[in-house]
Structures are given as C-alpha cells and as structure tokens.
Length: 501
Image (tube, helix red, strand yellow):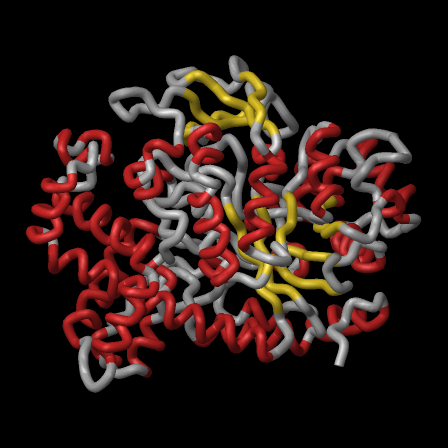
C-alpha cells in the first residue's frame, strides 16, 4: 500500500512556455517547487513517449513505448549547456493556452538540429556513447525505425519495401549504413531528452515528490514496437492486424471505443517468458517512481475486435495469462509499484487479480452521482485505504465543466445532498469535490490542475471517442502561480496527507 498523500495531475506539455509547448525547463522545476510548498507528495503526468500528428498528437498512440518525446526538450536547458545561443532560439507567436502541434514540431526540430550540430567537446561524445550502449536494447531499433520513416517520406512501416518490412538482416544492415547520420541524430535526441528528464526527476525526488507515469496498455500499430516484435502481436502473414483493441459500449460511447491498436499474441509472449513486457515495465520504472497501467482490465481479459470493423460492438472478450504475467514481472521487478486503472465495468476476475497482488485501483468522484445508489463504488464512504481517488482524470470534463455542462438536475441534487452544502455555485461545487477527495480514506488523492484553478469545459485535456482537438490544453503564463498553494498545504496537513519528516 502506498503511504497517504496527495498530488496534482498535470502533463509536461501543459506547462507554460514561450516555445509553444510545456517542456523540461524552468517551469517544470517551478512546478516541482510549488508541489513541495503545497505539501504534495505526487506529480502525475501522461505518457512521455513521442507523439505523432498522424495519431492526432495523442501520447497514447506513440511511435515507441520506450522513447521520450523530443518536443518536450527544453531549449533553455540546451542553451545552459552551451548547445544553443540565445539568438538561435527565435521567438514565435504561439498560442498561450494550447499547443499548435504542427507549428511546434517544425519549430523544435529546427533548433534541435542546430544544437545537434554544435554537440561535442570534452567528455560529451563519451557520455553519448555510454548512453547508446546502455539503452541499445530499444534505442537501436527505434533510431533505425525513425530514420527509415524519414527515408520513406513518413509512410507506415507496413508500406515499406518487403525486405525491410520483414526485417531481413542483410537489408537492415544496408539501411543502417545508408541512414547512419539520421540514426545518430535520433539517438542524440533521446540522449538529450533522457538527460533533461533525469535531472528533473532527481530534483523532484530530492523534494520528496514521487512521479506517477502512465503506461498505455497497447502500442500503436505504426510503431517500432510492432515492427521490431511482430511475433508478440496478432498479425497475419502480411503483418497486418488480425484483431484490434477497444472496449464495448460504455459511459463514453454507445458503440464502444474502437482504439485500433493491434492486440497481443499472449501465447507467444508466454512462450518467451514475457520478456517484452518485462523490458517495457523496467523502462517505465527506470523513468518513473510509480506507473499507472491504463485500462488494467485488458491485462486480465481484453476486448478484441475483428480488424476492419467500423465500431467496437462486434468484439469478444479474450483471456490473458494474467497471473503468469504478473508473477514474472514481480520476480524481475520487486515491489512493482503500479496503480491499476480499473474504471468502467470491472468483473470479479479483475478484482481478484488486483487483490491478489495488492494493486490499488482508482475512484473518480465525477462518476459517483449518476444514480441514487448509496453503495456506489466511487462514493467516498465506500472506499478502502488501498486506492487512489481523483476528482477526474485526463479523460473527464473538469469539475466546473461537469457541473455546468454535463450533470443533470438529479445528479446535481444527489451531489448537494451527499456533500451537505447549500452554496450552489460552480466555485462551491469545485471546492467541495476537492475536499471530499482529500478527506477520504483513500491512500492518495490526485487533483487535476484544471480543477484546482476552477477552469471550465474549455480546459479539458481529452474527449474519448473524439479524435481531433485533444491534448492541446496548457497553462497560460502566470496561471500556475494562481494555484491555491496555501489551501493545498493546509488540506494536506489537516487530512494527514503531508509528507512526513
């Protein structure tokens, strides 16, 4: 069980920045200082993997499950290390409250190329070589994959020439020679990201702040993960998916959610001793202190939809060797500090697996008042200690947006009756929802930054089942300083959530 504490959900890309997207620079360190001042224990964020414009910039549809997102590299930190001059970081008129991904991608790659050309000096090449050797298990394939994607003008790997698509060794060696410069450049981007991330994580840990990262259960088809490990996925003889991922009809969609990731070939994964999953989890735990497994139920039983289906309705539940998997993970990764995202309809077999391994689940207060059930599992009086409570997640509306745009009259009345408040303003609802989370018995209470700032529906991060327009929200300059630091610290101390010592 995790020690009692509280924290804030805020993705790196949502930090304020003059460079069009939040990054690993000064504002990230300022946010860590704010968490420390507010007596918080946790900083939760979304996946840090590369995003793709073709996948609508979702951090859950990446080209790699191991690589870092070069868009999050800080230009200022590169300047501090002498790799950029201030004059090499031209200002742009980026939007202040959202990310313009196409413009940011072009802009950041320009200055990264400038910094790459300046790279060198005493010891630098040696440190870079050491990094490449340490991370070669995933880095070599990733760098080659990205170089080939550039060479073939961005086409998906299943459209590449057959010898490369099927990874014929002689052809790969030839491509490695032809793409040598680009391969080194891609490795260097990862080296810089890793250095900046490691420094920020160390800074947080020194202030007793633990970082919660997010592990998407599935990987993107157009990724190095699938290209380099096709036997680990259900693919046909042409390496096209046989089945794809999703969930049946739920709160978010009447036709279910069709995610279209390739699903795992669990027979092959088991035969290989789950080494792919062990390597993936090790990479995550090297990067984060705690890992939230998104859609945890898919590691016990998953919804498989025939490839080519237009909706997720036609899927079927399929089994997973869950106990063998988690026994293998725990044997290689003692402790295994994970959070199981167990939202939605959860069956007994999922609960039994979570209980068996002691994995904490999640409670979302925005879901607690949809019916008049006094035993609703998201109502605070029903919690046990081994859980994380959230007012909402990156997939939900903000509290204010929920109250003003989504909640019906009956739902609002149930909330007022449960909370015992008379003030029926959006501000009073937000404050009371946060208080309910903080005072609950749940070991950890995580509040999205948007809720602490009492922002409305325009500030939500993601709308599930809606492809475009997500992942853009970020804090405007100066807005982070409006977070209620003193109130958060007072609540953390009052409800026993402040760090000890």
